[in-house]
Figure 1 (cartoon, rainbow, N blue to C red):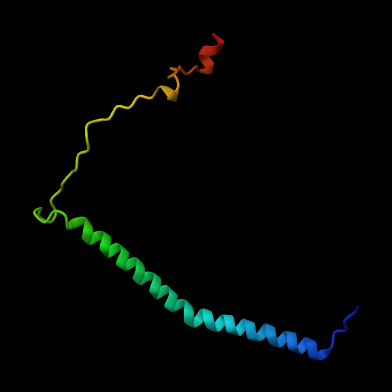
Figure 2: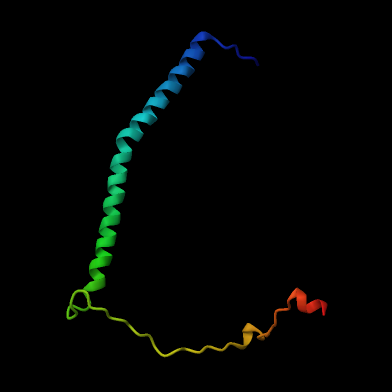
Length: 98
């Protein structure tokens, strides 16, 4: 089965390529700013909620006052499954020859 390329099929293919190209160009030009605005607005809302909830727990502190939260005492954790500690000593090349 062989197909012959005709001028009509070539023009139809070229027209489809041009229509798809300009369609994508149109969509990108007019749809991408809307998507970008939506994304920026969403991120601004997310960060503004984070910032407002961070300071809302303690209204008694003055602005600019530093407060350090301390965690529980050092939790010294030993685990026998970690393996043995091996102490090592570096050997210099100068010391190795003598």
